[in-house]
Amino acid sequence: MKNIFALLFAMISMTAITNAQNSKNTGKVLRHVVLFKFKETSSAADIKKVEDAFRALPGQIKEIKSFEWGLNNSPENLNQGFTHCFFVTFNSEADRAVYLPHPAHKAFGEVLKPHLDKVLVIDYWAAQ
Image (cartoon, rainbow, N blue to C red; front, side):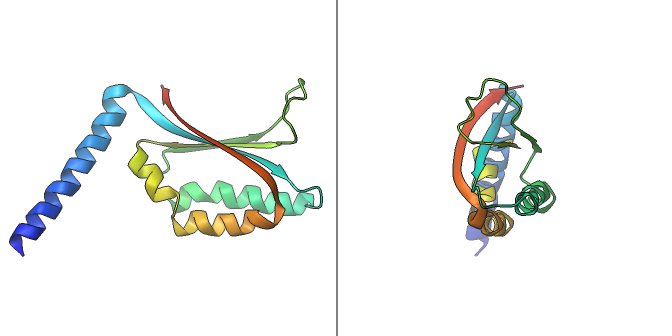
């Protein structure tokens, strides 16, 4: 039993050290970019519920390092109907791995689902 506990402790410690080194040594963060195109049948109130639910996630999921969002205002008209952009920032891929199946994220998906026409998601490592 002591050996199992020691092994588990060592594994958790190594993961924490690796995650901290990945973030601090490289100066990079992991960006999770999400773009939404809503159904034409969704009302402004429906879309506001989605916005509010997404904006609540940083308070519910501690692995989110930072969060920002906004509405498209590009004059180029190249957005292909995508109107909302959300940036979720993580320190590590392990933090993102906690976020994706997190119950709060899954609950957000249920709020979004009836109103979503299309979604585009891109993740990348960004230097700060």
